[in-house]
Length: 167
Image: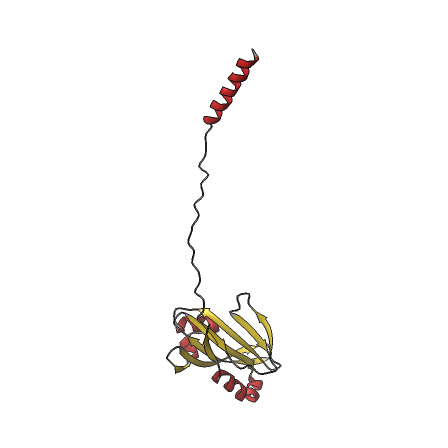
């Protein structure tokens, strides 16, 4: 008597599990993703000896150097045009800055300067921007208006010797 009951239980267990309602648990995974383009160049400049690297973003695309009298920021960003690059890097339009175009080939190079209100009075930002068609590379020097007069030669030399080197 035990064998038929055990057999009947096995048949019922097997048949009831086959009748269970199954839900669709499939998940669609997107196999492709957008990879931001990697900069093709690295901005180099002969920084003054008494500057110290103060901060750097995790991806290394923005580096801040400090000096007693000024701050230097090296930065690279993706941009579709030089106009967009100026807006991203300075927060101002190209028309507001009125940059001077230094070269056009192989990369566009612009020099610019602007003023802004700072913690201790007026601050001056002087910079150079290179644009290669997909990325903008910028070197900006920010200092108080009074200190800018004393370091004007240093700033001019620094911006004049800024170069783009292939990665």
